Amino acid sequence: MAPDRPPVAAPLRPRALSGIQPTAGSFHLGNYLGAIRQYVALQETHDAFYMVVDLHAITVPQDPAELRANTRLAAAQLLAAGLDPERCTLFIQSHVPEHAQLGWVMNCLTGFGEASRMTQFKDKSAKQGADRATVGLFTYPVLQVADILLYQADAVPVGEDQRQHIELTRDLAERFNTRFGDTFTIPAPHIVKEVAKIYDLQDPAIKMSKSASTPKGLINLLDEPKTTAKKVKSAVTDTDTVIRFDPVDKPGVSNLLTIYSTLTGKAIADLEKEYEGRMYGALKTDLAEVMVEFVTPFRTRTQEYLDDPGTLDSILAKGAEKARAVAAETLATTFDRMGFLPAKH
Ligand code: TRP
Figure 1: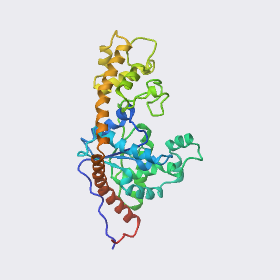
Figure 2: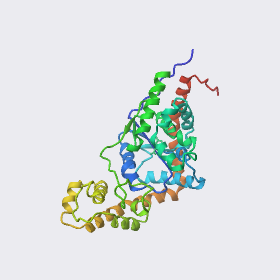
Figure 3: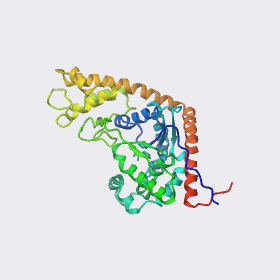
Figure 4: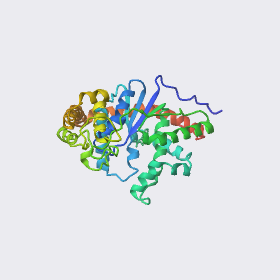
């Protein structure tokens, strides 16, 4: 009789899992305030797994040397931002082969039409030109499903733009569980509503992103602090002079207030009072200082990890080992449930 594998043991704390792409070089302020701060906070309440998703990075053309450097850089920045290898599991996706393996299984459960409805694919393939887009880009969300299900994650901290991929994850987990027996935890997106949305400093109508209107609109955390201060001081405001939070009529000033408030923990209403009757210049000068105080130690810590690749590699090796223990167990159960003949070693 086939052994009836017990479901994967539930961890004591709820599990959180997220991934970040190693494509950008420096993280920007939007990444940090929107996602990475969440990662850091969840270490305290969850059994958290975070990975640098290098397999996802090759869904668009990449340069090998750049990918290698950016993968290290992403890990170093996550550590510099406060991920603590004693309190979470930080690893590189390609170090855990189970991602690609479960990815294949999930590909075989996903409807072609279902995958075709993923809006991020539509956007990205439109940007590339439809005939240059790869099949890998098409199945990108399915690999993400595997990332999440391998760890039996309860919560997936992501931005609003990832909601559809988490929905797909839930659908596929339910489909598998219905067809083959309870195997996967159904995850929920952890999208913090009041998380600050940060806009481009030169064009506050668009989200801060690395495809910014101009480099002046984007705060890269690894920029020279001087450059950062300059960007803050030349942020677009308006011709009025009142410092008031009003995203519709005063998007530039409101964006500065949001950043200020998020970095210092001061309430926006208090900032409005503090700056009553003062000029935009005063707000910008103070915010520039706050920013410099924030980015300076971040840059130093990142550089320390980069200067000591032995330590970084050993953190990532330990992370991969911890991750693999969980992933291998889930994959074995999955294969067994699907009817794959067990390999005899
Ligand atoms: N697609 C995510 C993004 O672009 C990155 C990602 C890959 C991810 N795998 C994941 C996020 C698993 C959460 C969970 O931001």
